[in-house]
Length: 492
Image 1: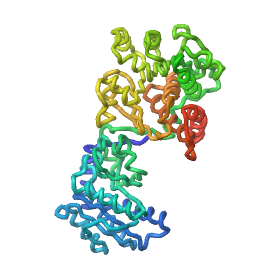
Image 2 (image 1 turned 30 degrees about the vertical axis):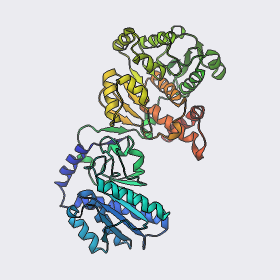
Image 3 (image 1 turned 45 degrees about the horizontal axis):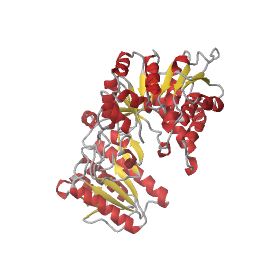
Image 4 (image 1 turned 135 degrees about the vertical axis):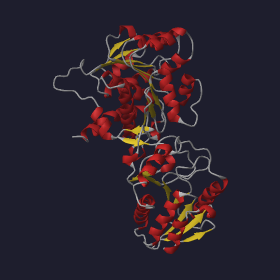
């Protein structure tokens, strides 16, 4: 499991660490890690380091100092290093002196070409949008490098300039990095929101900061070992009932595919039995013979959890079925039309049922569904928005997106690292909802069910889209067993 930290926590940890070290030690560690990564990138692309060229984009403060000291180390490896100083009066003096002494030089314009660009404009003290001068430099670099035709490698120092560090929001021009060399710990902009894709590959450099980080992290990121250790496994004495029975109330005459996809997701999960209740029973029975089919939630029989809402419709019949699911004293994963039905304010009865629930609830909105549930748009901070909705609903919120956020009513939040754009296809969320319901039925706590479901769903999307293949939601469902198998086998 990895942790992600806000700026205030990073600043406090840096101050405590620096108090134990000789002056300049922390910057030297950061610069060394940055230079080492730049050397590796130059060697990988060009086969050698000597004679290559690097442009440093240097802002004021410590971020620019990191870039300058790293540039000095590159000079000593035979790299021609030029530094474009955005604020010469506030440049890190020792860093600039070190660069010049090593053979580097300051320049006033963007060169016509270079092999590597180091973005040291702003660090964790910066905010989106960039100031006009910095924005002009970013545009100038993009124009010059596009005209040259041979695009250099772009490396961001700690995070890409032009992003909001604590939220991942981007409001204006920003650097699009191939690699971000992050110092000490991950920051929210590297893993969530529109900023995350701008970071490229994130290379975390250990500068001794982790033991000094205190309090609650902004986010957690599950890794393969975490999800594999949570995943319920049958034992020698297991049977289909002890493994958990999941009910799936999805689909309708208009959207029968939602039933097939959500049942496929549920069937791939760890539950031992799937019961389907809805209007697509004949199709479900034909496609999934082991599934027990009924037409109504009330006739489905006993289950340990429900998945409900995908393709359900929003008529009175659907509303009655959603109420029946929510009235059950078992965990529920509510998706799609189910979210619409609880947010449209049609009657007070549904609200009363929700307020009276004591069993766990997982809701899986995309941005528009979130707005209906919360009564407002998400805004620039996706994590805080998800946490606020989780507290309001007393539910686990899985806010879908390129970097899906999972928020708990207890104030903790997670971000999923396996997301892929191929999952942006109709019905993909139906598969995910079914899988989460199966995890709930097998006994997983709601936050872990949501985190694990999103993680495996992302893996399945990557498997389905390998080699650039076009992907449908049916492909994602079909790839779930392989994704789960690779996850579990990696621990053995």
